[in-house]
Length: 186
Length: 270
Image (cartoon, rainbow over all chains, first blue to last red; front, side, top):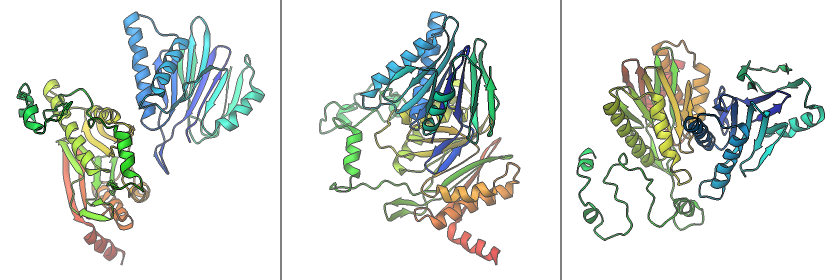
């Protein structure tokens, strides 16, 4: 089952996604990237029904980039999140709803780091930490217990391989792939 | 199809719809020139498909899913191998069906799922690739070709298309292999197998695959993987059609009957 997690720190957002693209019992790819770069400081993590994920995420990605081309400046993470939610909501009661679960993580130069949780019913919530997938049932309670908004964050990821990225005022940075390791950030 | 496009401005409506069907968008024979997605008149395709597949409906259409196809990359390019059995439910239509479409001398497309859907949509893809070449004076990349197919299929999401295809080729970025299916999935990778026998093929292919295979070893691996799938899967069989995509284009390596392969492998083991 696909897994996404995001954690907001004092001046950064840390996000991770698993890297498996599976079709029933077969792992078709084990190095699949589920993060879509919307702009220099915004990442959209997308899981859900095959096909829907890429089609919807690329649609949002291209439209965010188009906004920058037309207006000369980038959409803020808050605006991008609401734009994404509106699109999900519009398609929800159509003949072709998109079954996707999303996390949007971004750094706004004025408002700082932000993490938004969205699901296939087009709910939107700004949260200090969030997760999607069966793994969320286990990790959300860990985060509830140990998360503190302004302290350094330490957490353990337990899947064979993860894509981990950090967003801060400098942009998006790829952290090393984790094979059963702990990571600490400050 | 090209000739029909040139004659487009003529009123074909009167000729093609002799019974005077109304509200019929005339296609003039070519998908390529039309922007809109065509659906049957007045019927919602998704509900229509559901009524046909229900067990207690009067008519139960059985879609062809019986196939094994595979493709893998290695140091000398891409090997593509497919079986050739075409089934409609329990009935074998033919044992000699061509499941690889030769899009251009550098690009191949495999077919699994519904035979009609695959043949039609991959031909449309071939049209698009040809037009790309005429407009841009260079061959289309494997990535772009697979994206074209994927986007075409995404438009018909939920309407009952059944296509599991691998687009294989060699372009300026090197050997390319993409898996595209009717959900809209498009994956780039080193090894894929599709169809009802795909799991059997994966078993043999995964175990024997290395990047540094020699060409004869790669041919043997691909042939064995399809053969083993046809042995276990009732809906796969006939012959093994094998292609090798190299830098200067693809070649058809062989077409061998699986019955003869059975004797060959049996003999070798003894």
